[in-house]
Length: 190
Image 1 (spheres, rainbow, N blue to C red):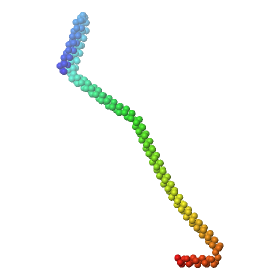
Image 2: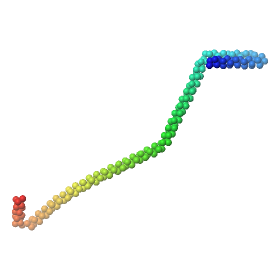
Image 3: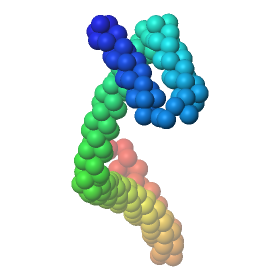
Image 4: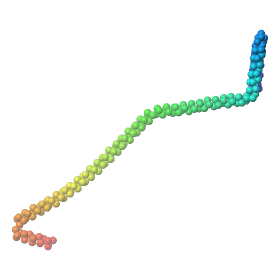
């Protein structure tokens, strides 16, 4: 590799010198000072390039090689990132396609939950209504019982009072004595 570079270098120098010599030979000689100046400039340039190559050639080569490798790595990295971005894009597109199906599923789930909640509320309300009805029936039966007992008490009091009045109006002293005797006899016998 190094031999190839040296060969290319010297071939370039020879080509430049040959070109300068041909140009010098083709001229009339009047412009000789210009051509000499031009030739010295070319020689100086070739020497400068040679020195530059000898001093910094390896570094420049390494720099160009590392730059080439960096560019290659960057391209591979970009390819890998592009592939990852394509995968993500396909994944997002798939999610977007599934979004409508997911939305419909969520709506159906919410609707089913709403129906279940509605049924539960209705069932609870019916049970509560049955409890309230049973409590009302029990309360009504108790009220009826209390009312009938109260009515019986009042009626018995009224009957006793009416009977007492009736007996007092019809009872004579003899009948009264006779009733007391009968009551005492009954109490003694029992």
